Amino acid sequence: MKTAVSIPDEIFQDAERLARRTGRSRSRVLSDALREYLSRHSPEEATEAVNRACLEIDEARDPFTASAAHNVLARSQW
Image (cartoon, rainbow, N blue to C red):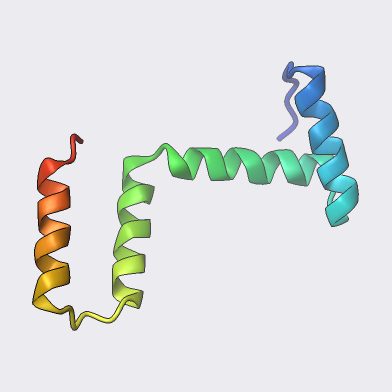
């Protein structure tokens, strides 16, 4: 889908440089950026990313690490 958006000149120039440096089109760079932004701001995507990371980590945790992690999370404000 084609759409027109207004973005600051500085961001446009940064996107142009990134496109040239990576050999991608400007449209691809902007599309990838928007996709990443949306995934970072979607609670479902964030939960899935954390779940994938947890699956990749060895589930055998030592008691000290488990306790420390629990204490840190208990004090964190969500």
